[in-house]
Length: 189
Image (cartoon, rainbow, N blue to C red; front, top):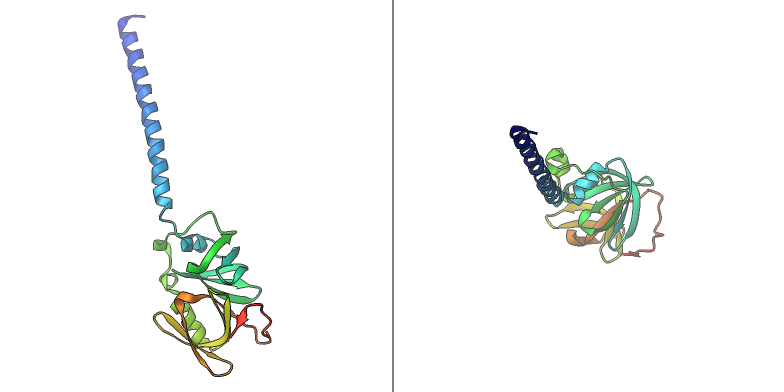
C-alpha cells in the first residue's frame, strides 16, 4: 500500500470515528429533548387523546369512576359511566387507568375544549336537572345547580335550602337518573 492509500484509509478512520462520536452525542441530546418535551404533557392532554376510550379515574373522596371519556376541558373531563355523566375536576384525580399513550397538545384543542369547569357546570345549571355534587371530603349533595360564580357553585336542595359549594372542594358532579333514589354510601346533605 502506498502513502496516498494509507492517507485515505487514515482519513476514513478519522471520519468514521467522528460520525460515531456525533451519533453518541446526538442520541444523548435527543433523549434530553424528549424528556424536556414530555415534561410539558398535561393530564388533560393525555385524557384528550383518550376521548372515546374507557378509563378508570380514581377520585379523591369519591373512589373509582369507570366510563368513556366524552369531553375534556382545561381542568375537567366528562365521563359517561353507565348512562350517567360525571363532570370530573382534574385537580382531584388521584390515578387514571386505561388512558391513551398519546397526548393532544393544548394548541391543537378546539376553543370550546379550552373552557374551564365553570362552563360545564353552567350548562348543568341551565338544564336545571338534579345531580350529586361530590366533594373532596367524601360528602355528596343531592341538589339542582342554580348558578356558578368565579370560585363556587350555588345549588338548591330538595328542601329548598341554598348551598354555596367552593369549586376548590368540588371533586365531581354526577347526573342523577329520574328514578334514582338516595342509596349511595356517601354522606348525604
